Structures are given as C-alpha cells and as structure tokens.
Image (cartoon, rainbow, N blue to C red; front, top):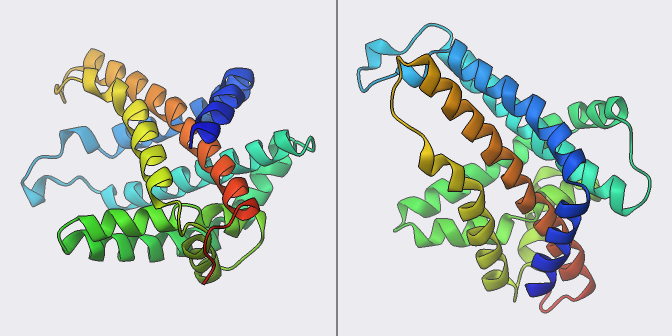
Length: 225
C-alpha cells in the first residue's frame, strides 16, 4: 500500500491545479443546490422538508457521480498521456452516467444490507467493491461485471484497500471538523460551503489512490476465483 500512497500523493502534488479546476466548480454547484433546497434548515420534523427536496437529492447524486467519473477519466488521461479536453471528458462522463449509477445502486444496497448485519460486513463489501468504478469506466464492463471483477482482484488486498480508504476518508473529512451549526447564519453557511468544497478537493486523493490500486492488483493478482 505504501507504493499506492506515494504514487498517488506525487500525482496530486503535480496535477493539483487540474484537480482543483475540475472539482471546485462541481462542488460549488452542489453547495448551491444544497442551499436552494433548504438542506441546512431541515430538522427532525418530516413536515419541515421543503418542496423540491427529493429533486435536490437526485441532483446531488448526479453531480457526485459526474464528479467521480470525471476524476477517474482525468487520471486516466494524464497517465496515458492522452488527456481529453473538458468537453470530451464531460461528454463521456454523461454517456457513462447510467451504468455508473446502476453500479452505485447495487453497491449501495449491498453495503447497506451488510451494515445492518453488525456494520462490519458492510465495510467489508465496500472494500471489496471499491475498485468497481474503474473496471466499469476503464474496461467498459457492465455494472454487475465490474462488481465481480473488483471482488476477484481485491482478494488478498482487503487490508491494503481498507487502510487506503480509511486514510483518504479521514483526510477528506478533516475540513468538516471546523463546520459550525448555524442554519440561519449566512456567514456560517458560506464558511461551511467553502469547507465542504475543500473536503471534495482533498477527497480527490482517494480517486487517484484507488486508480493506482486498480492498476497494481491487476498486474499482481494474489487470488482469482
């Protein structure tokens, strides 16, 4: 795993400007959607959910999926020295959106079911399936096939993938520690939005790290079903 960490950090240091240019606009749009749907003002009362909230959730899901796809394509383009332009990358991301969402839904249901069974099985499933987006996008596999491939090639690498996920998650969540709870304070809402965008930028590290892991486990399979 040390190789994955070293290589992914080197990539992020070298191409931080490309990551920021990609992540910030999409993350800023996400924060605008959150503010527009009244996300921060929602309490425990179900009647307090504002109109259009469910449409906002769908928009957020699409934005996050588009961002992850675009980041993976960015890393692929840079490493293959065939980086696509913004328009071409965005076009391909939109084309891949439906199978990507299907794969994410299958992952989500599986992980949620595992989490209900004392949490640990859910974490294990997440770790074993975490490479599925790369098989789907980079090898043009279907949603189910990408999950199967991730399961096969992650055998013997579960602890490496788990610690990689843990480290990158902690780093990406670090800015959220400084968020304040003040739904009606515009200054605090703006501050929280900036911290959330920073969290998304830091979260790009995980995409790069698991891209490195994706390449490594295929070149060095330990167990294949």
